Image 1 (cartoon, helix red, strand yellow):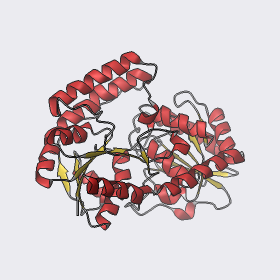
Image 2 (cartoon, helix red, strand yellow):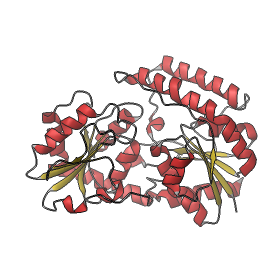
Image 3 (cartoon, one colour):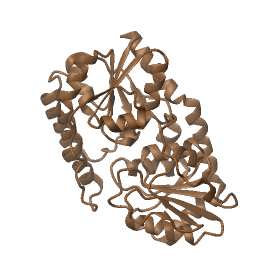
Image 4 (cartoon, one colour):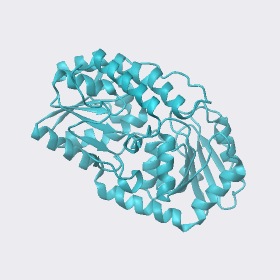
Amino acid sequence: MSRFLFVVPPLTGHINPPVGVAAELAALGHRVAWVCADPGLVRRLAGDGAEVFACAGAPEGSRPPELRGPEALRFLWEWYLLPLAEAMAPGVGAAVEEFRPDVVVADQQAFAGALVAERLGVPWATSASTSAEFTDPLAGLPKVREWLDERLAGLRAAIGDPAGTADPRFSPHLVLAFSTPELAGPAEAVRWVGPSIAARPTASGFPWEWLDPGRATVLVTLGTANTDVGGRFLDVCVSALRERADRVQGVVVDPGGMLGGGVDDKDVLVVPFVPQLALLERAAAVVCHAGHNTVCEALWHGVPLVVAPIRDDQPVVAGQVADAGAGVRVRFGRVTAHKLGAALDAVLDEPGYRAAADRIRTAFRAAGGAPAAAAHLDELAREL
């Protein structure tokens, strides 16, 4: 059997999709290991028995909240992704030397995985935890593209094979995309496998008895990486939910404690975390930041969305949702309770949004998910 080494950044949204794939590979008899700057996070998501090689990381940094567009992208690359790659590279190299993988599976933003594998002559596949890169987000921004190309060339010279030519975001061997064209639009040389939805450990204690079966449940979440900027938006959401309390209950995820936490009353529940997959089975709508995982998990369940992108790939993903007809886009920094409420009314009451969400749900489930991704990796290992 083959050995697969997953290289991931220390971010929940980038680890969750390959967790199911790794489990499927292990079930086929393959040996799986991980490289991450936060081994504890990997074990928490993939299981205590996960084999994890530690490596150095880089602090994500505190981005000025006013940064948007190209400047936000530049900040992300300059202050996090590129330093993270350089910091991870020695640990990735040591893990490859010790584990001797047949295939390295590198997250699309863990450039060290791709470049070190290329330098050491190990085939590598891309795990695309977001589909935003497939739509060419830099189209019309030639100066930004030139700047990015220069940075990637410098990174390759520092940690990769200077003679290499492959873009570390797109493996020439295999690119696994955890979405489908029905949401993301067409793209060449991509294996669309749909979301990787696998059982994940969750802490007990969610008050399921609080949910009122006579009212629609709306989940509000900004993911795990936006606790520093979400206070105003969550306040707006709570106001809009309370105005619809005769027919709607809101579950608001507030890991940073911006709203104080705890059960407010019978209309709005504010909690630091939720068992998201289980809750989505009961949800009628989701209000979120257009994070790729949250969007795909909602649509996997056929749940329409109100999306309020903040930064990074989120504007692209929000555009995908709106273009597919599966949700309404609002402005994160400026939306009022009135406008948010109108968007929420639309996705709850207008059948077209749920119909579009159901169409994507069907496409997602037909794509195969984690078993399909594992099959593609198994095939790659056999061919090489």
